[in-house]
Length: 329
Image (cartoon, rainbow, N blue to C red):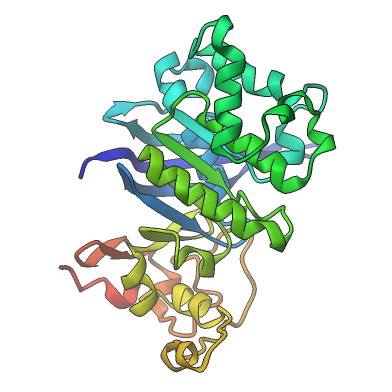
């Protein structure tokens, strides 16, 4: 299985400038700090984390909304670590994104036909003569009526707007789609429908998904592999089944132990509750050593001095924690 996306040592820092009468000082928000992972063709990689963990910033750097501070982004072996405006058109055609809120990602001044026409025209997917038939085809894929092409986004529901956003992402026949929390802004009643449709589309068109979410329980049934982010770094990455059955990082254990269960059978295999004390540090003033040391119940003196490296402790299972630094597969 070949890698469609490879991220190496990715960093994205945002400067914060403060001035006084005597001097000008620059600090940085380390939104993404030395992140590395890969995504195989036809795979769904879940990138999970709390608000402020850096997961969405990672997605925006990958699709070219932000330029990276450092690191490499390889798409099908080609380095694309620049903003989208500087990327070749064929790369932009193959990498698409579905944003969190369709209410803000769709132009309210345009009807759906105009919205879906833009990528089709820019990338010359079809001729002007076949434009309407292609738009009807896209609407059919996401199970929306053909006459919706003449509706405004505000005239349809939130779930239907997100279906339009998905149709727009599919317009250029991409091979990689970044999903930035595609259901979190929607009613619970329509979230399952959106997820099921995304899974159907992924199988039908053999797409690769980078799925950004804060919902760890969702990834149990969706993702091929899962990565956990905390304060701009990936703390653990493993195949989905291994991730839930054998979580290693204390932060991962804490999150999994907090996932709600609905049956006694699930309760019986649920990990022991890990209590987190302390506050989440500011991304401007991350403490020395491991960023999780302010909350970790297993912290040692070393955790306040040295930031641990990511190590592969079992085939395909990576963890960044001093508890496992001596273990390598």
